[in-house]
Length: 503
Image (cartoon, rainbow, N blue to C red; front, side, top):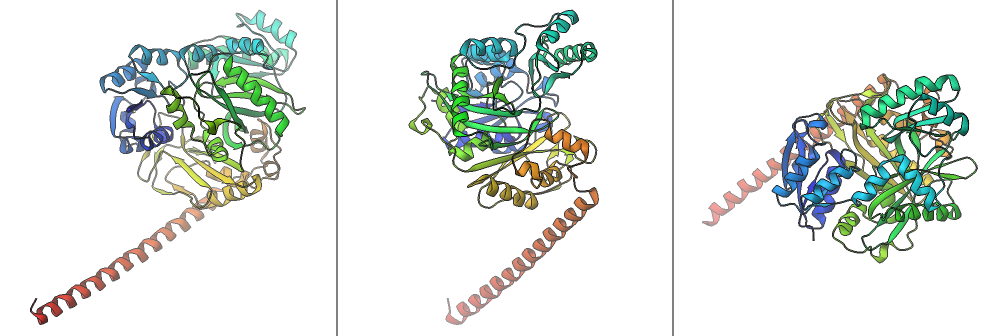
């Protein structure tokens, strides 16, 4: 059993993991950087340990130091969350060498799926459809030219070790290839320490549909349905929903079966996601496998009633998946939006600063996965995602209406955020109708079809929120004073009556 868990992450995912652990009676410890000393995980965890200064390379990416810390404090296991070291085979091995359980898949699965080229080979062997393209790195420009000619333009150049929207270049014509090849290799080397690049066919305007899977150490692997992740900005997901509005029962069964085969090909256990591209003809192609918990896992939890973090902990303890994981089908519809500290009025540049006012939405079917509070500083060192707003409805229409209501309730002041973008998007006719692809959001923003409310409009909303807050506080203060006066009068009356009675 896991009695003490070290959480090797920060922000909302660290909070999410420690809450699940606490509900199981597990002691929690977190690591934090100097920049996160006042972070919510530090406040909520049983113990917290500084792992280094602000830059992640000197703190959250220090795998050996984190594994050594886990051993020193007597932790039974380490949960990596997502990002940072979550998909690092090296870190998982460091934990194992220290005698600490890594809450995630085996080292071999991490290594196999960490390389896009290796994973393509495995998927081909497992009978999982892959995007047409090469299965080896392109050593030089001459090889890239030959590969592109064989595949046929347009092509995508991809970093073999890539992820998170980095190490990607679309090449539509031969005269664009040389510059794109150099840029992709350079970005791959700087971002992942590996400049391996390969080419694959570019699918025009596909949808991004992924399947959540989970496996145990006894060989059981199940698929928990799909998520629609096509609303992206610069190849970064910003809105996710489950189930997909275009995936019917037959296609769902096919994609889930393919996802299970993909996981079984690497003897996968723990939670993971198999990502596919879905073209306009309903054909799906393996994109990659994320060997960790996904940012968007809450939408799957909302439509299945399952707790994926608790399931990860069960698997790490060697327990088999229970009957609740058999024949899982979605109930209702869930949508998640990622709240970023980015300025929608200035090209979505990061917006660090202090959160001066925060009012989270509530009510039926609303969930906030949040790592912030009023007064906390939004750091310049990390990904600008602050929180995730998730809603559930009996169907997609109710879920979107509930999302619109929740976004109208949400107030966050002190830093610029992507909230204004979502308020517009949730009312967009194409989005409401489920007509989307991975380039739709960028296309609409470039064409001015999604008009984000002006700064003046947002200022009016902020002033209204501030006045409402001040009025509420004044009423509360006045009520408290009146209540205190009544208590004093009651006490005085009581004392007088006591004196009269000789007590």
